[in-house]
Image (spheres, rainbow, N blue to C red):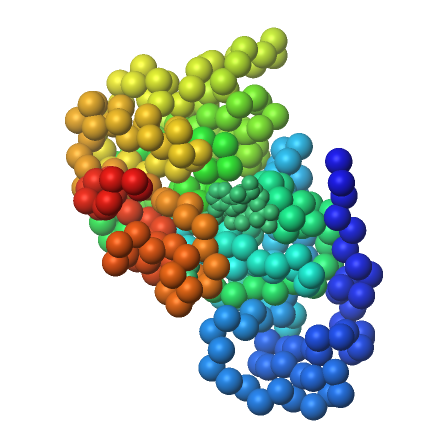
Length: 309
Ligand SMILES: Cc1cc2nc3c(=O)[nH]c(=O)nc-3n(C[C@H](O)[C@H](O)[C@H](O)COP(=O)(O)OP(=O)(O)OC[C@H]3O[C@@H](n4cnc5c(N)ncnc54)[C@H](O)[C@@H]3O)c2cc1C
Ligand code: FES
């Protein structure tokens, strides 16, 4: 496989002031001659960040903990919101923020192309660009006080996990939590610490795991997520669904058959995005901009969109 090498000039070095494109702080940018570039209200300009920690989740997925160049959290997203992460010379892309602490936001990223493969090659301490938060996030007020069913496949657990973590951190505000999660193999299950250590300990919850194909040492369920959801005969609640498009399609159809209400089934949409701020027209569906009005939509809203979506 072709491996993208990060040019050493792009490796994080706070003492290095000779980078060709000039240097920045969280407050502004400096030209190569050291003079400050006049600050302008450019919302596309990323802040300078550092990838402080990298955790391997599976053979093709890693979690990146990102802090600002000044050590402060780059921004404080709501569950389900997104950030645009960039590497010099490789470009930028939108990723869900899966968790956060006082000083970091975490993004869990699958290697699929130029930028994401490069991210999988870097080491802790790498400088990056980060901007956000973007998107509407999950409807917290609507979910509060209700039983919630989370259904995710593969890397689709990344955005859903931000809401699960929020519910667990504010446990008294939510009813019963049911989690159905599946991946191709047991190796492909992301967030194993949560799945096998943290979430089994949580109060008033059901956790159902499945993998696509039989494995000798796998004691759990085998089968695709949409049919497992049907097999479990889950009672209708508010449902939050995210995963590959084919999984979402069949899961939404099954939930409707099972009596889940279209205005209570919530999903996130992965339209390709460029600007993230409603300017480039890359993500619009009719008059709706997924980067501004979404990426979180109810099934009722999706049903009202043009048929090709
Ligand atoms: C709202 C939103 C949330 C996302 N959250 C996450 C996340 O939490 N974790 C994660 O790993 N990825 C997430 N993604 C997808 C991520 O943005 C893409 O994987 C990334 O853009 C790939 O960049 P690349 O340069 O590595 O790949 P490229 O070289 O640009 O493309 C590689 C391959 O992936 C395909 N591809 C790239 N982006 C998309 C896309 N959005 N939809 C379908 N196919 C695509 C391309 O067509 C190509 O075949 C999200 C995308 C959106 C829009
Ligand atoms: S990503 Fe540019 S308009 Fe939505």
